[in-house]
Every structure is written in C-alpha cells, then in structure tokens.
Image (cartoon, rainbow, N blue to C red; front, side):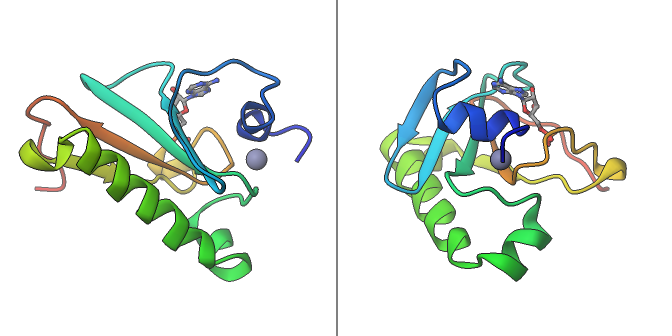
Length: 114
Ligand code: AMP
Ligand code: ZN
C-alpha cells in the first residue's frame, strides 16, 4: 500500500534498523522503545491488522511466528522471557495500520490486566 509507512519500510524507502529478515518477514527496532528490547515484526505483504490478516492471508501467521521464534531463540530471549503484543483499533492504541507484533524483553515487564 502506497501510503503505509511499514510498506515503505519493507521497500527500503524509509530507514529502519533491521534485526531480522527472511523472504516473508522483517524485524526491526521500534523507533520509540518501551522496554530495553523493543522490536517489531511485520510481514512483507500488507494487511491492516490481525483480523484482516486472518481473513485475507492467514498463512502470514505461521511466517510471523516462525520468524519470532527463530529470532528470540537465537538471541536467547527465550531464557528470561519476552512479551508478544499486537494492538487492534483505537482502544488498544493501534497507530500503524500494517499488522505488526511487538516483542518486548530485556527487563522485568510491568504486569497488566490484573
Ligand atoms: P502500534 O501503536 O501498536 O500501532 O505500534 C506502532 C509502533 O510503531 C509504535 O511503537 C511506534 O513507535 C513504531 N513506529 C512507528 N514508525 C516507526 C518507524 N518508522 N520505525 C520504527 N518504529 C516505528
Ligand atoms: Zn503496509
């Protein structure tokens, strides 16, 4: 999508610090980190959010989760743990409408939902 910043990032039209890359998925550092480790994982093919992804292109989920599992194991984030988050819509605070998963790690993360 031409007006999507993460599509532009996939195409290399805006800069990012990539930490993971394969034929389907890109991982990169979040511009405004909310934890010691804060990375975003996106599929190269555009979908708007997780519901759009599941209805239009569900194979992306396997690609994304495999990439996240590979990366977190390689970086030993699986040892102390990490949080995987996706936001959908205004109540959750979604600001970029290209499906993405936040990987948060590297410190004790605050509890939520209690
Ligand atoms: P969300 O609020 O779940 O839609 O998450 C969007 C995230 O994208 C936020 O954490 C932003 O800091 C991050 N972000 C926005 N633009 C960029 C960019 N150009 N490079 C890296 N991260 C970005
Ligand atoms: Zn996009």
